[in-house]
Image 1 (cartoon, rainbow, N blue to C red):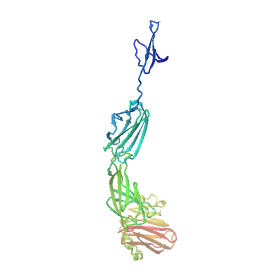
Image 2: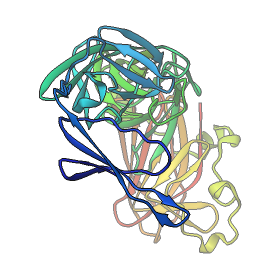
Image 3: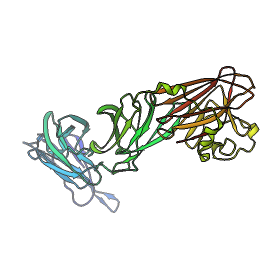
Image 4: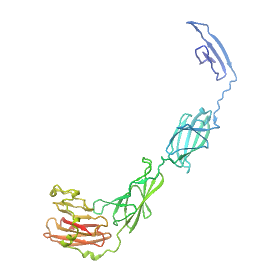
Length: 429
């Protein structure tokens, strides 16, 4: 048993032992022996320690470094280490003070190596704590370690660069080159599409919502997603996968630019044109009101409401009243309902045509309840509107036909008294 100045210091058993004095003072060493159960007289020694020099200095190390794991890489002050992009490293400030274990606390600050902008920081205590950093910048990092060595501020600065490996987010490819769009010119949402590097004719004053084709960046993860930037005639319109826009210029160049991980990638361009030219006022007086004009239109374009309802025959035409937004061969009828097997009726029947396809249309029109009255037909073609109003005898077939110099975009049919019926609808060129 060893005591120092009357206070227990250490103890042990066996035939030999050792101890190291750590301070000045009187150490008493007492040996107790046990001989086969018989306690012997103890033997006591006294050791006096003087002029014991204790080294309690804690200074900044002359060889400061941190350890980067995995790999146990030493990064000394002013050094630069290169790691793969996307790697997560653990930094341990292991040799900031001298001796290393007198480090009480530390802080690591991380800055962008190119711009100097502050990115993040971490603090810890002792030389065993650590800081995890994910290397997701191609610009690289400047790191500043500040350690507290017994009240002394010790600073070490070092640098990390990243290799542009396959893990870096970058450009890829388009899924396809088709831009889908929708419009609502007649009360129904109508679909359409146009391909990159192609042109399409649309209507002025009508909002169109475009959806970009999907662009795949080179990595399929949440941190590597494309950014779509839209512009019309060079004027930015925002970012996102969709754009809603109303065109007013005669010619419009629409651009979709993609960006992956900060890199400018591929673009998709397409043209939107609007109808131009003067409207012909004399066409307001031209209306074909004979069955022969309607019959002259291709029979293959005839809409049969009994056999083409949603692409399948009606199981019970007289009871089916669900033809709102009925579409056949690109022609869409809105605000309308079915009546028996061949008719469509409504207060105002709006008929939307696919852009730029058909110049002729014809149909039979009558009043739903058998009342005489005026039928008004409006035909929209580009920026022109042609209006026809005529008396309709409820007991006779009333024919309507139109042949325009430009494509028909929309037709509206209404009756002055009550709902109107449309039958034998045909269209063509």
